[in-house]
Length: 81
Image: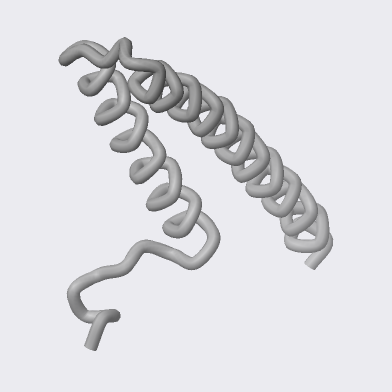
């Protein structure tokens, strides 16, 4: 029983740390996205800026999915029914 009592706080701390890192990365990417969109709004759009926006949006989707999977557990085909 002592092992479990020691392990739960460790797992909680690890999960909290991982989620905090994901939040920080998502915030950094959201700031980058805002700057890229502002660049387009200022009339300096280009295919490379659009590609950069798409890459960052894709990374945010990955971060959100990973955070949800870690916190709630992955969605499987059977769990959707």
